[in-house]
Image (cartoon, rainbow, N blue to C red; front, side, top):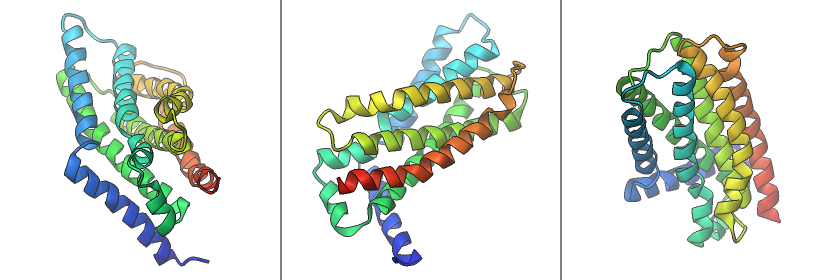
Length: 225
């Protein structure tokens, strides 16, 4: 059985490869950040003369996050196939380690993007947070859940010829479910009294844990296939 140090080295190698690729090309963090910032500014321009109620504000918030994630996160697996570098990992790392390294990078990227976007959203759109605890839990749980969903979708679709449309088709139904949860929790945090809204973040965290547990198993089957 491989030692823990062996697993950690492989996961770290995959993570650092993604990090170095990001620092050279600035394709992930920069793309996600710009999409979030431009979307928030656009939303502010559209709603300049109106007062956002909690439900509409929460809907805009989650649509921006999901769109930004869908554009940038799936590339961690899809790009490997396009650049013909996937075989390299098959030679020097286990599929579970490859999955975890890329998933960890995507999760960190999404958490950072969510944090920055939340600050910009509250300041630019002048949204008042009535329950900071619910807002933080929902935002964190949603960021991890979205990142894990898009990562798994990209991993499943990577071997296919039409990988980008397939990744979108796989992720959309789950992302719609996450948007619904996110809107419920965030609207509650913004002052809209919704049933079970305070539990939305916890449900999203539980879903993210389940996805991160199943993801490496699914990817290993695809890898061997």
